[in-house]
Structures are given as C-alpha cells and as structure tokens.
Amino acid sequence: MSLDFTPPPDSVRWRKYAGRDVIPLWVADMDFPAPPAVVGALQARIACGLYGYGEPWPSLVEAVIEHCQREYGWRIEAEWLVWLPGLVPGLHAACHAVGMAGDGVFTATPVYPPFLSAPLKARRRLMTLPLVRSEAGWGWDFAAADAIMRSSRLFLLCHPHNPVGRAWRSDELWQLAALAEKHDLVVCSDEIHCDLTLTGRHTPFAALAPEIAARTITLMAPSKTFNLAGLGCAWAIIPDAALRHAFEGATHGIVPQPNVLGLVACEAALREGGAWRAQLLDTLRSHAARVEQVVNALPNLSMERVEASFLAWIDCRELGLAHPAAFFEEAGIGLSDGAAFGPGSAYAQYVRINFGTTRTLLDRALERIRKACTA
Ligand SMILES: Cc1ncc(COP(=O)(O)O)c(C=O)c1O
Image (cartoon, rainbow, N blue to C red; front, side, top):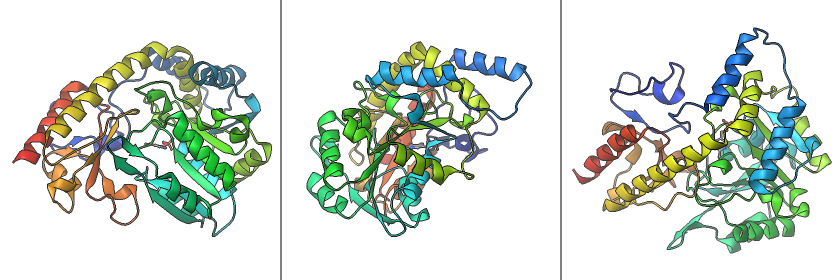
C-alpha cells in the first residue's frame, strides 16, 4: 500500500495487517503527528538523559486544573486527582474499589469492550442494557435503566459514548444522575473522548452538581485528543475522599505511575495544543460528514451522526452477512468487529470505523466499502 507517511514500526493498528493490502481503521489512535509543542517538549526531556522515577509536578497539576476550568467551567481541586498510566486500569480499579464480589455493575451497550470485561475480572455481576436507536439517533431507555440500576452498585458511563458517537446532553446526564442518586450508585464516567466533541461543549457528568461529583470517578486523558496513547498518561478526578482512597487502594502495587514522557507530553498538550486541536476538530468534522455521506448512501449500511471522537458505528444488518467485519477485511478494510462491543453476538452485524486518518486513505477505504457493498 503506498502511503504519504510512515507508520511507526511498533504501531498496533498498522502491524495487524503488515504486508497485506488492508487499510487498518480499527484500534482508536490516529495517523496525525502530535502537536509540535508536544514533540518539542519530549525532545527537550529526552535530551536531558535522566529517566529515573517520576511523579507529577505542580505546573502539570495546575495545567489539568486550568484545563477543566477553561474547557468545561468545572473547578476541581489538586487533591482530587489520581494519576494513572491509562483509562483501562481506571475502569478496573473502579470495579475493584466499589462494592464486593457478586455486586452488580451496570453499563449500556454497545460499548468499548473493557467496560464488559472489567466487572467480570473484579468478580462483579455485569448488567448490560442496550442503547436504543430511534429517529433521534442513539439514546437511553430510562425506564429500563431505572429497573436495572436498582440492583447495581456501580455504573460505568461512557461519555462521550464509544462506539455510537453520542456526546450526552445535559438533560440526558441529569436523568442518569437522578437514577444514580435514587439507587445510590457510584458512577465511573469515562470521558477520554471529551475533548474531541465535534458538536458543542462537553459537560463532565460530575460537573452537574457537587452531590453528583461526590459519587463520581471521572476518568480523563490527553491520549485520544493529542494522539499520545502510547505514552501512558491519564488521571482520575475523585472529589470524595473515601471513594478516592478506595480507588487508590485498588491500584496500589498493581498500577504503575504514568510514564515520565507521558507527563511531559500532557502538560505541553494542555498548555500549548489548543490551535492544533482546533484544526484537528475541523478535520474530524469533515471526515465524519464524509463517512456519514458514503455510508448512508448505500442501501445496506447505515449510521447516525458522530457527535464526538473519530469513530463511527455502522449498522450492517441489511448486508445479510453473519460476519461483516471479515467481509470488509477481505475487501481490504480492517474495521473493528462489532461483536466485541456487547454480550454474546448482539452486535456481530455492526462494525466500527476509525476515521482519524489522512483524507487520501479515508477516501480509499470508503471507496473499497462502497464497491464491496454494491458488488
Ligand atoms: C472509551 C474508552 N476508554 C478507554 C480507552 C483506552 O484508554 P487507555 O488507552 O488510556 O487505557 C479507549 C480507547 O479507545 C476508549 O475508547
């Protein structure tokens, strides 16, 4: 495959189809180099030659606090922060920290696969509820959520939601918050895609009200936004001291500190990555519109508008195939298999496409999809 950039030799996404003419649009990282300010900060840090144990420093913590204030109007305190090498360890820690073996953990499907595996690894009972697709797009069945949350202790919320691409509105968040209050649940809100909201301003679940924040673990990172996933840097925001100590206890001795290079990249990205991010969002809006246009013009595929991230969830049921992901792979497009995003084979006839790539490659992939679906 001829490319106008060179993927790094360690790339998980690119290695999967090495040597094959398959365009890899599966795992969620992008083909865009990080902001120049981040590259510069990393180069300066590497040049110093000392790579001992590290920890976050005051101006980095200040950068996160300022980011939350500037981007979401959310005032957080330094002591609420727990640093992590990634969000997935945070999901696991939340499942271990809340309740006990056998307790229910609620989440809505289709969803990023670790939401399904983390509760089971912590010996919790996984309780799933399908999101519903209507004229208005993907949304919640709040009555069904009410019933299922009654027997849960923890609610894993994906906000914005991977893979359906919804950036939950305040009224939807308030309804979920009211149910969490009613059934006294802890909420772990994974907001990793929040700075890639394409349609408006992000409202953190915990920012709704202090009493909501008191029952919430918010997980965030610069990794998706600035394409830094391999650098291992993320944080949890946990205002309630007892919940924070339980969460920290669940990570202790198992989850390492973030990588020092990740911390350096994080501060540079938050402080100096604004213009780069604005440009990225323009590109992603244009790519999302293109994917939607091509997909919805085909008689056997459909999707809803993407409100956040660089991922789109495609309904392939009309193709009438048992395994659309394999069909597309055969046609030269490597997509995420929908089967991984829910229990059993509920979503086996869906695929997820990553459009965080160059326009040339995206157009080539969309043309392959179009040809495969009209052949
Ligand atoms: C919703 C969500 N949470 C977490 C992650 C991964 O987080 P990390 O790489 O920080 O563990 C992803 C990656 O795609 C994701 O989409």
